[in-house]
Length: 151
Image (cartoon, helix red, strand yellow):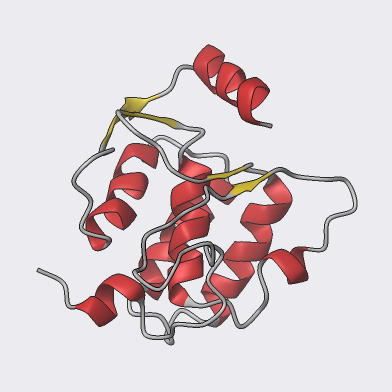
């Protein structure tokens, strides 16, 4: 079993999901929709925490996979993938699982989402997931429906 530091990452600041109370229980679902003039540096700063990197990958994967329950949504865009890949590449040695984030984002950058179930479940398992394990890839039509509904 992973230690708490491994689950949270080696750094704790700059989480995307700072909507939780003192108990750590998330009280509001994070939903990030893309906009034409969005500032990626504000959304994903270069000093992004490992937990925030995990959240970005995990929440973007929700638009690609079937799971019993999904909490958190980040619209997957080429620009966001490229930006996060740059951060993951530069900071790979700083993150406990940096090379894995880099591998995931590099595949996605190349348009290869064939392992999105494994990508989702990698983060889900780091977090000690019990509900919401991804079971399959969404079909292209299901991806479109998901995006239309949430973004």
